[in-house]
Picture 1: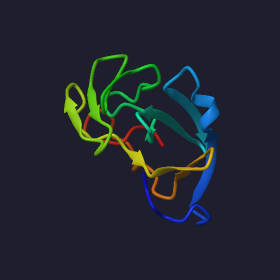
Picture 2: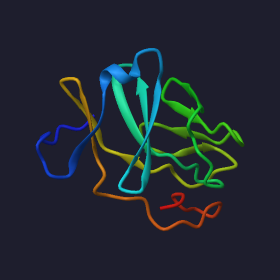
Picture 3: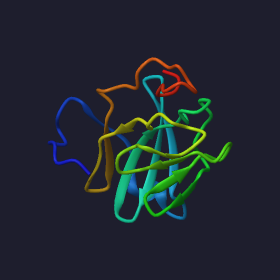
Picture 4: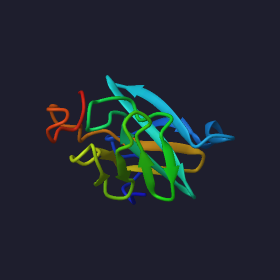
Amino acid sequence: MNDAPANSASWIQIAVLEEFQGQRQIMRVVGGLEVLLLRVGGDIIAVNNHCTHLGKSLQGGRIMGTQLTCPFHGACFDLKSGAALSGPAVAPLHLFPARIDGENILVDLSKRPGKSTIGFGGDGPV
């Protein structure tokens, strides 16, 4: 979670907590970005919804503790740092700062993922 002011121009509301009832993942498309929101304990984590291995969607991937496993080829990522923990992905997952403000989920999308060289260290499609 981030302590930046919720009214900062770069923070936008993309979901509400109520949407997580009975599920741990919500995907949103915002400004052309696919953002996967994950509920991990009391935290909301926002990631670029593209595995850095082949750019496949991470939605539906298994969450174990603070790790997310790609549902296609099994790459595993640390949800605190974005680091690729096991192959076939080697590049880190792009994380967006996220916070809860009352019932609203706010995400800072000002730092977008870089241009991709998927499979060779990129951040997935832009």
